[in-house]
Length: 195
Image (cartoon, rainbow, N blue to C red; front, side, top):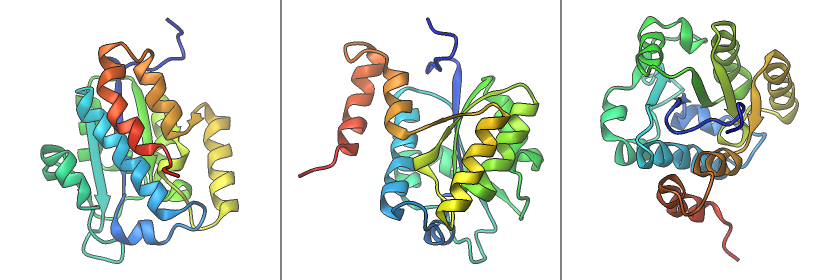
């Protein structure tokens, strides 16, 4: 097996600040596509029985509540979400850091809104702590394209693998006839544009 390949058995998925307000600030990617990709990651975590950690920041402010679809997909994780009180780097929040450590996984798939604020800092912190990180670029976004491009470049330069939702999910599946492949087929099929 390729040492670069993440597997359902050694990986956790972290979804950071996919809140109604923060998602509305994104201008670098279609907001509906970004949200659909983030939801696909959550569905995949549940289908593969992977640890899924959700977090939000200042839900009672402009950032708003975490997207309600997460509650339908992952009710326990939604109820247990780490509701930060404004800490920008989620890994500087003790409760979030503990939740990540408690997964027991050293490979992290991270997506957040916005990439230039909510994704970049926990990614850099995780890398400095020895985690391997895949950043799912199209399950997040930034206010502008230049902000998104520079944040993604900085994370990549620090050692993160920058990827897309489809690449992440097919990498976890490995083969369509495998248990993981079969579990992910419905979610991947939802991502295919309908003509």
